[in-house]
Image (cartoon, rainbow, N blue to C red; front, top):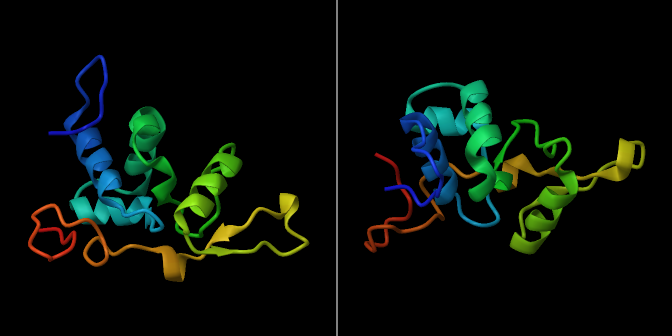
Length: 129
């Protein structure tokens, strides 16, 4: 059962996307496409739409663009979360508008299996089936 409170029932796909977002460990990220692939359904646009419509109660800053750019309009809020969680960042070049860093996708990307939560308590990490 999802931990995402709403007045109305969430569409089933949205609930599944938000459940995956909840699995992403602090300091790690998954791309929109990674989430869709993990679920075996939909694509990056569908995941992005779910996050835009229903993701406010989820760790939305952990579901990101594949190029590591921060979500437009939410850069400062996301950046504060990344710094708090120790998410790997790449500093922006001085020529970049606003000097906003990007995520270091090589180091921050989570594969959905290792280094995540252990919901079963068996030491196996957050492997998906």
